[in-house]
Length: 337
Ligand code: ISE
Image 1 (cartoon, rainbow, N blue to C red):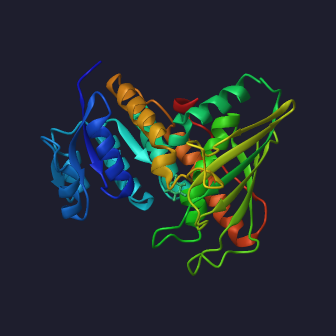
Image 2 (image 1 turned 90 degrees about the horizontal axis):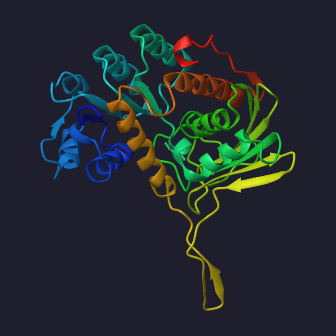
Image 3 (image 1 turned 60 degrees about the vertical axis):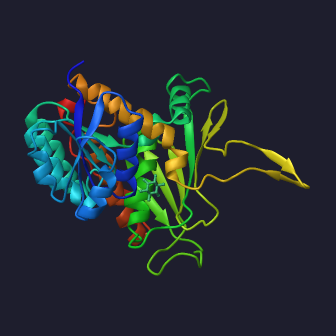
């Protein structure tokens, strides 16, 4: 193992702040060296109690800081491209939250820049791959324990959306996780996406059609569907039911405690993604740190970031025209095969 990672966390919002706490309290082999946020007061609040960490307002300043040898990017997706290119130029380990970039063209630029560098430096933050139930279902599929996988049914429900969450973000920010999960489960690329807009909830903000039904096909013909419902009010729920030749497997059900009292029974609905995937984030970040200290990456690659961006682009087009839209991918560079 080489030196401790001294990480610059770029973006101290909801996800950035969560990762800063994680790095500072639960992750081994890494320390927060700098926190960057355009809102300097937010960066300063985020480094409170972290010895040796500095608060900055400019990502480039953090990347040029000699004390920084790794970067975790947790800004909104449209800000990732520039930071990724600068971090690649410094040739340091990078954990980039999803989406890698918001469109296929900019994601392809990142893939090309990394290919030119000649080694994988970017791990993309698709944390579901590190969830114990996702891993267990992945094993059942890979080992063909119930025969061939035929269909995947996904439910992705959020209680509410933050201000500025556009109709396209139902695909780019939320269904992007299912695009990656389907590629992870099947080991195949996605070939087409269709989006159907049915009856909408009155609880969605203006401009959002919610819920939406997304229909997906993979190379071998596995069919998948996603109910994306981002103003579901009651809480957070991410579930999958997989249909095989010899049975079905469901993951993502609510966990206990299950209580019976006063003539009622039940438990609590998970409030948000931090609680649902908290353990998966811990495993993901530790896997990245451990791999980075060996000069490797420990999870989804820039190619996964690019392929899911291409799915999102097809998904946003499909939202508009209701048609089945083909996913177009460039040839996979040897670095990722
Ligand atoms: C959010 O950005 C996430 O990544 C969550 O996992 C997802 O459930 C949510 O829909 C996104 O907005």
